[in-house]
Image (cartoon, rainbow, N blue to C red; front, top):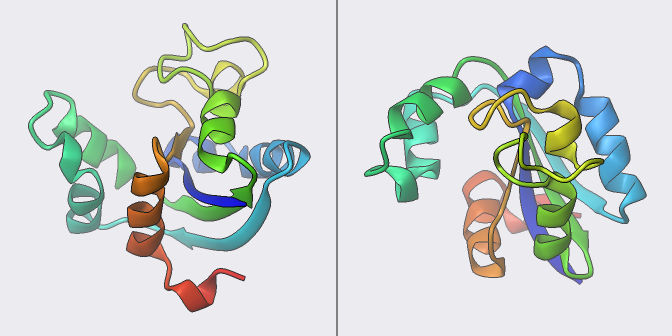
Length: 137
């Protein structure tokens, strides 16, 4: 079994689509080990997305991720990272395969509904950013 992190982004929360996405994740075989609803502060968003600090979209990403509440979830299943990436679809919803979360729920490349860890190594780092080990049951 492998663990990964997902974030249902402010656009998803504002559109009341969390339940639909969680249902889809569970139907895809993900066990939800931990959930936290929070409103990221600027410093938290900047720290979480620090890997993108030099990219031109960093400021707008931080602004977007702090504009409203998010749902942060720890997920587990076989090949969790790769499977979540496939279920999410391409970052740009216009390029996302039909039936993926982003094709169905995202409205733009930035307002793309959901975040998912991109590697098992980053999943461990991202999970530790939001959860302690004892919280994931």
